[in-house]
Length: 332
Image (cartoon, rainbow, N blue to C red; front, side):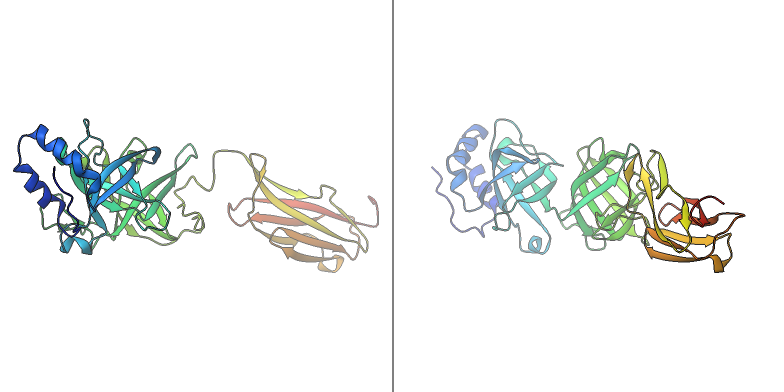
């Protein structure tokens, strides 16, 4: 029986090198199983956000230079079938505060089942976008400065990627494969545009290089959803309603009106700009009361034409004209 090593600073792969010298693969597998959970680097984890089942791994920082990078190395328990692959998410209480942290597997060696090991990056952002059918998609992702992000796929020393100002690491599936060049995203309120998408590393993993761009007035900064031409104006019907419908203000009366945009019958919070014309100024007092409200006071009735108030939606740019009659208390 292999006794557990109590010094966690010892590299897991040094331990495996020792185990390799003990015999054939089947024997090695059984020896690893015997003491796997007794190792100081042992961690029970969840996979791909399924919290109904745990898996066993050794999780450690790697060599001293590796500790400067926001990733960890892992070694899987020797399961009969391979349980971890590139593009998987591994979750556990990394910060020891009772909350779940998520890691994205960037690389993995599947050659020997007793030695399934790889590198995983700590998830620190959400990748959000709205598709053409107005569906919101949210993916856990890794956000890194591309000028300091080190790519280890082409050598042990790593290669600094200069492709953009940031790089996003995310799992690759049917939805993330729809991400396209020049698509905009928001991270912590800062907008970025896609410059390059690399999908060739593995069919379940991708890298997205982006550069910072100006903020668009239609970007949803609060929810971190960038505007790409469809989030603001869905294909549903829009309508501006100005109430009350009774467009008559009698002499000496002050009446307030409200204007709102409705999308498929649902009231929106868009603000409005109002302007009045068509009647001499001495006949009325026009006041903007709020972002969606204005008032009219009738000082003198008019017989020939109604007061015209243009109500313009500040977000969509759509506008309607409200005709308001100034009367003595009935039609003249």
